[in-house]
Image (cartoon, rainbow, N blue to C red):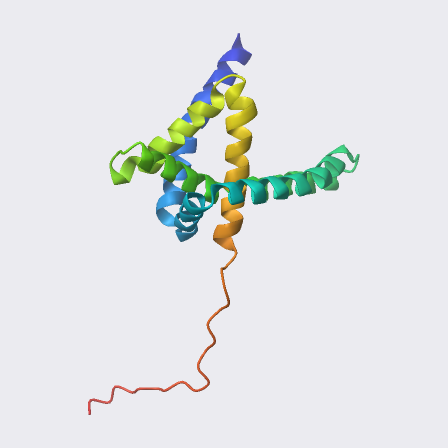
Length: 168
């Protein structure tokens, strides 16, 4: 009985903390806004890029986890934490996009979208096998697009003019 209470207590904590995390990331990081724009303009591209990246990373993770060496297993966990931690940027964009389509106030859009996404992923079978994998792939792909700069950087001018404020 105690194990069941701990399990459902952890689910309740994650259920509250995940929307709060996405709300903070969505409000503070400009990359989350870029991810939202990319998800709006090219959702299939985000899913394809995210799914490809997850597929490429999955094999080395499985190999590292199956290794008897502790440091290699730790490396696998660190790679997974970095990948999914980075995917939080794309998930914040996805939650903001879902929340805006639900038409709440501007401040609550990301939190409401995160809650809707979370509840959809908890739905048996459809959520587990369809919503959750597609949301993770879209989040990872949107993060990749949000963090990789588009186009060429603008070159700096060859000579900079220094203007002094000497009161003249």
